[in-house]
Length: 220
Image 1 (cartoon, rainbow, N blue to C red):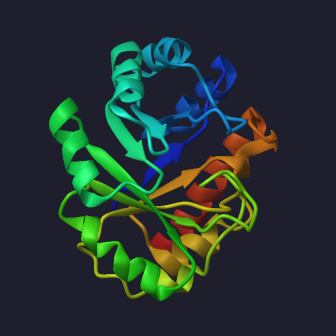
Image 2: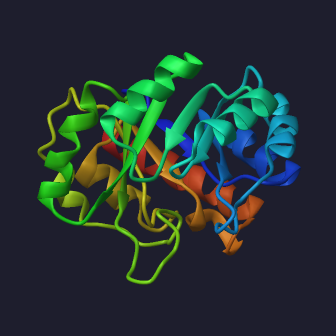
């Protein structure tokens, strides 16, 4: 069975981080975007990140951040990877990679097949892609809105396109998502929360169980 990366994103507390690590998360995400209920300060993220050392890769998630903010995050947190979740161009990605010498993941919003096709512009620059649903009209958040896109759009994606699937994932639908999209990784945030920005350790555990069950069915 191929390896499936699992990223729990928007962590803010020791309890949530412990649940993510106990479940076997390959990546843990920290969001630096004041409009998000999952926003965290760089110093606090650095403290939590140290608990994940050697157990999961720490990802710093930003939205159209300038160099000054990225400098502060990298200095305080020392992430393993940067995730750019805004309108950053391929040229901006290349500049960020050169400045910090870190892998960069680019999040892209999807509603139709053309959105996936547009991602090819980043494929040669980003170390990894993340496909998320386009935010609902009026939302100020580029992600973490709890909405999904049509996963069938990814069914014919060539195997060489390395991406994480995000957007509206939870324990109830992850089996369907995996069977339709067959991603190399998944990213969940609002789907393991009891309220916006409040991670629920029980929901995190249930999500991991659902993933394991779905993967067991696929392997049978």
